[in-house]
Length: 353
Image (cartoon, rainbow, N blue to C red; front, top):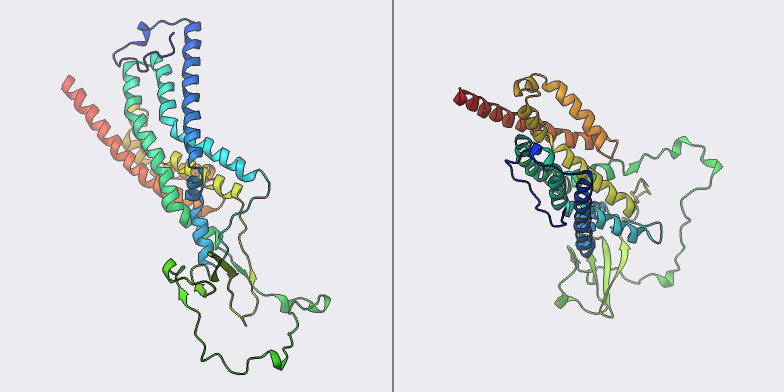
């Protein structure tokens, strides 16, 4: 069996007319696997060329949430090789996704010989829609759901109540530092009313308005910045003075935690968006009618809730509900498609009589 064997068997070919020995089947399988692996390697190399942009797309809600709440927009690595290994893993996963259509074509080219013309028509009808819905679900997660989910999870509890008045404070020293004494000579002789205020900008001033040694306030980053030796320097995040210290709960995320979390959720939403394909396929093969599935709608929703809880990587109910709601809507879309399939099948049967 040649390496560049024709990919698709014609639709009117009967599997009983195709005869292949065991050795020919194994050779065909080997050639298909090699082609799929070559496609995967090409997709991984292409993905690695844009790995910085891909990782930024997966992490961008975290940085926005950090900035809004006054945190430094940073994710950490706790091992010397963590960033490099995570780049390789992401490139491999994105490579699998990019090469998925080509790999599926290779799988289809191998199994098509064992399918009857009617079965091959079903695959040709449902497979493209299934692929499109998978990518639509992953894109829906990255653009819509992931920002809402991370905003809820990362800001759920940012402060803890002060219960020090209930505790025996005599056992520990006070956490309030002593007041610093300032000599009269170091204090200004006059107030600051006559001085020019520091300019304030939403981000940074335009380059033509920057001057060496001049401070400005970046309100977005909450930083005091200065241009020095043609380089912008920042003083860190500003905090209010005179406010009692708060018991804050600040997120400290790792690169190897945020990216797999997003990728697993994207895969979960891609799988969850297969509901209309499953419903239409069940109706097409006659396993259950659209009326039967609509009658047991509550049972179907219960099963989908369990499935959403299982395939989402986070154990919180919020992420499960964000997946269950579109799955319920897609189930109704699948019922609509199933009714159309049954109507067309009835029309063909009537015309055949």
